[in-house]
Image 1 (cartoon, rainbow, N blue to C red):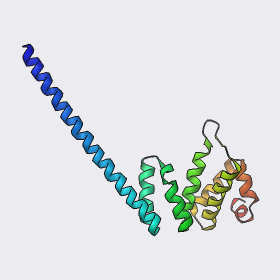
Image 2: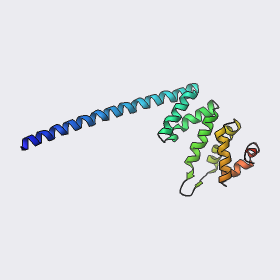
Image 3: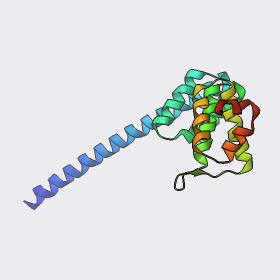
Image 4: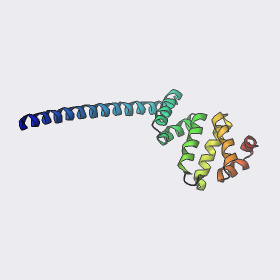
Length: 161
């Protein structure tokens, strides 16, 4: 009786181990495929300014709730290819980095504020609707350094009045 129980336990153990290893390897392969695909999309962004590749990266990182990973590709698309959606994404990603959710406020240093502001300004002046909406929302809901900077800027102040 004890031998049968031990034998069943061994079979159960090895069967479980097999499935665990099998699914673990399968997950690693899927992860490797995703990494390779994302690498190729990033190359298309860097070398060609490919908007479809950028949008696929955006969708992937948004789904993964990890838009910080998109910052480098966004900067490339914003600066090298003047893409207003990417300009807005740089602004958004950096805004999130400086947001203190416990106190519902932004914590800025001067250099970072200048960078964030410059990307918002580029996106707004390029006619990006999301940037214009965000500009209006921010200036009507926050009285911080960014709001003051926006209201002082002759080209952007007309959007908030």
